[in-house]
Image (cartoon, rainbow, N blue to C red; front, side):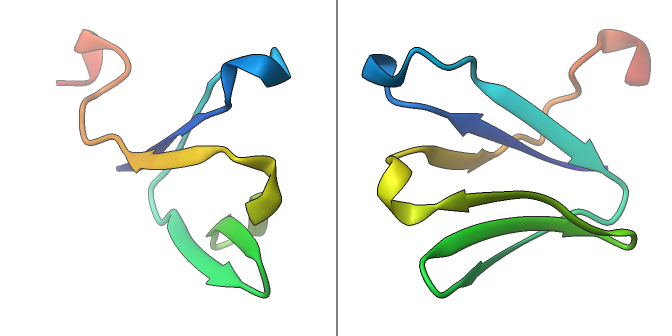
Length: 65
């Protein structure tokens, strides 16, 4: 299962977000980072927001192992 961790700059006071799906893909189009699965776009983040996106290959819950 693919998963990505979205980390926002501290000054934005937003919670970090972990998003996962069986067929999750990350693409970049016209200044946007777009996370999508077979049902469509899950999350779109503008490049000017300053968030960083990291692939997270570790399961969120040890029960998934």
